[in-house]
Length: 147
Image (tube, rainbow, N blue to C red; front, side):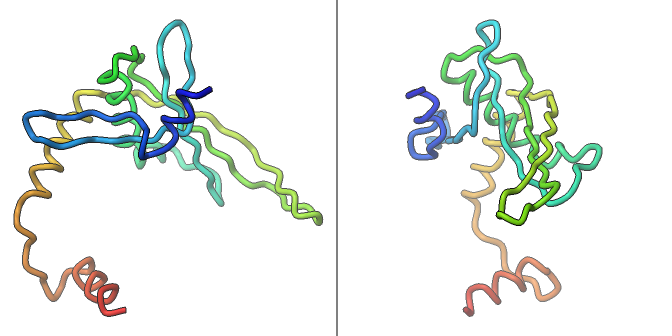
């Protein structure tokens, strides 16, 4: 599908321009299921281990944004998305990998996505804070910059 091919590319994916902030939110969907006229974002994840209960919370913001982007582009969405986990179970001698597949339905919030996007834009436009000697992230950043 030509539309989905565009949506899978971050350069031509779904986007939302916030005129008030003069900022753009862009997302690249892995897949999209159309069911009863509703567009349901689907995201693929590969894990080296079984998924843990509540693990989908790590992807909540991403899925919220996909639902928001669909809605902002006039595609009706049902306020949920699918996370599709591929978990390797066996590697055969020929190099073929056997996966189990688990699908999780995750509720989404377009309102939360918009609030998070706007908060991120405001934060990124503030001056960068000074580095702190006891901050692990500051230390990591200094080490990366030195390489």
